[in-house]
Amino acid sequence: MKTADFLIELEDILQREEPCKENDNLCDYDEWDSLSKMALMAFFEKNFGLKVKLKDLNDVKTVSDLINFAGENIK
Image 1 (cartoon, rainbow, N blue to C red):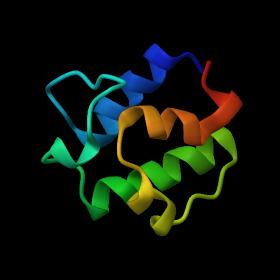
Image 2: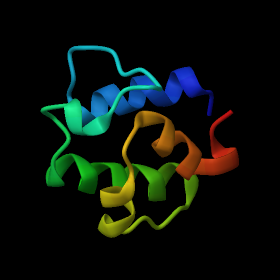
Image 3: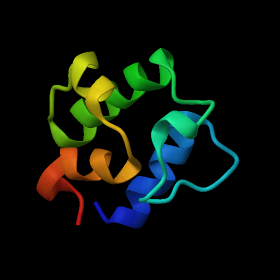
Image 4: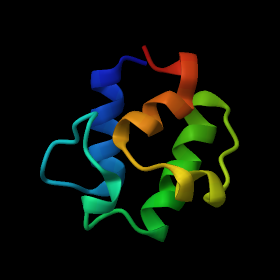
């Protein structure tokens, strides 16, 4: 998956009207809550085969951190 595609998916998961940018701080998003984290966990498992724990997402600070978390799955 390309980074641009991931950002679009992330906007959809978070139900954001504003675009997501790599350097954005997730805690600045009103939509960054436990429900969106659970949806993101399901997205990572479905699309990348990665089992993500809530604790892992609590440690993530930026959109770029999410991209790095996906590793080679996002280019």
